[in-house]
Length: 376
Image (cartoon, rainbow, N blue to C red; front, side, top):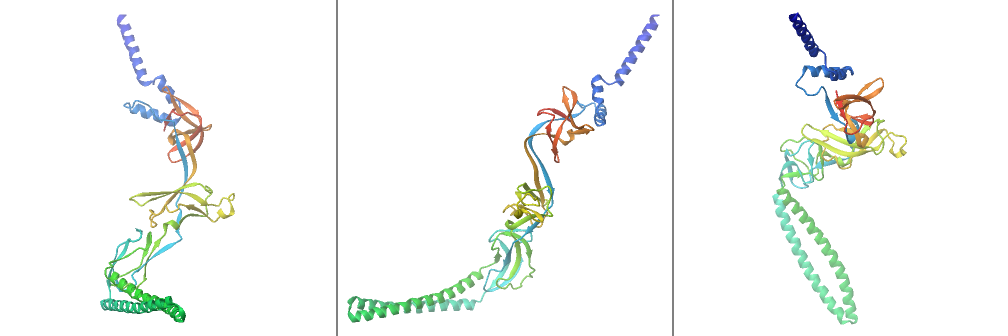
């Protein structure tokens, strides 16, 4: 009889141990009664006993929430700058380009290397002519100034002789001033030609006369002659660029903030601007057109016109908005909801959603800052 009781007790103990191993705790049972996605988390947790929690959570936070409309617009460079040979004298021969398409040039930056040959005999001739004209002008001026001084002294004595001296003085002074002016202009012209030749002797580069992006360079072979003011290439003027969306967009209205982004694989460039023309009929007629246009001022100087850009227009901007990760928002036939972790128990709370971007969902009503929500 005693042996039978011991056997019965051992059997009951074995049954209890088996049930304890198979049936989950009451807390686990509560967790498992939710949606199928949560059951998956529960089963995954059972197969990964090293984890301390059956699910991951995030804290509801406040911050700046934005929703962007993103597209690839067209960049129109409505104005151009020209690169040309700025050396008006000498035989200018092309050596090599010192820039390339897509490069940004400031005033004075080198465009191409050149070899300049000037007429040495002409330089020597100009030196002689300038000296001769200077000497002739000095002699003429000395002679006239002596006569003018003489007429002035006679005029100071008065009388009929003084009146005649005054007439002679005025006429000579008029002729003298005009002659000095003409001779000085002739000398200045010779000097300008001389200075140009001398400067060309030491020129090794043709430089940019304005700032902009190089969009085109003409084809030159080494040793080719570049005539004075010869066209070399074209530069875009970024400060005159327009960002357009042909046909416009229903998402846009005048004054919306816009961001232009360009990533060429090496560096990311950004510029802030705004919508200045759209198809919104509530706008004044002057702002309505066949395209949505954006203004970025002179902020496009650092953008490469050879690369695509992405336009982001901020449609929604909220400060101190309640946000949760997109993965924390579920929905069923009753609407959107989140699972809030309260003392280890999860509670379903239905919420009003304001919108979502790539990462977060803006919650207008239903939860509070600091709540701990379960994410998928």
